[in-house]
Image 1: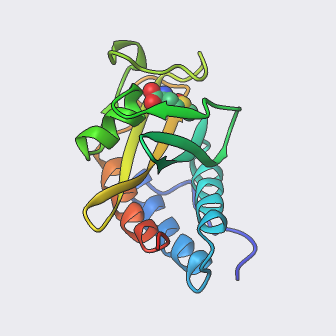
Image 2 (image 1 turned 90 degrees about the vertical axis):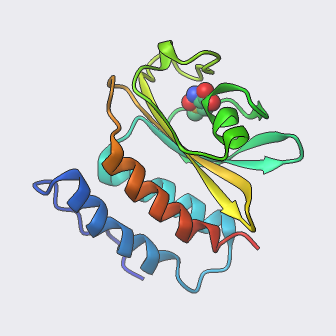
Image 3 (image 1 turned 180 degrees about the vertical axis):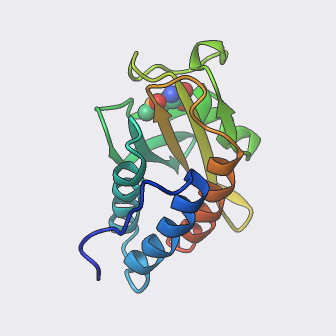
Length: 161
Ligand code: SME
């Protein structure tokens, strides 16, 4: 296993994702432990792009429960339909939030978070977890993030058994 990520910050964001995703795939291939793979994925995204917060919430009963993450401490449990994460779970869809203040019911784990993207992970047609990425800049996420992170979450789905 490579011990460092090869990251070229002179590339466009879409190109950086194209460089990063195979490295995450290599890092997780053959590793059956869900927590280990989610933890390294959160760390890789955080290291590559310097996001304010990157982490996973896992569906447990009627709530999302905090999983592996990188960044400041965060809310532990989120109800179905609540906040951006709970809404992404309920809608079974990615949600891009350019300005968290403008999202009704947004859960502010940190006042420094300004924009956010939440991408669900599907297993057998059901949402089993969501990836939550927060930025301390407004309007920091675009369709390039959505495309790459959705692709990455298709890989992550394989880690759920
Ligand atoms: N803002 C999220 C809560 C999770 S934290 O941002 C880490 C939400 O509204 O669901």
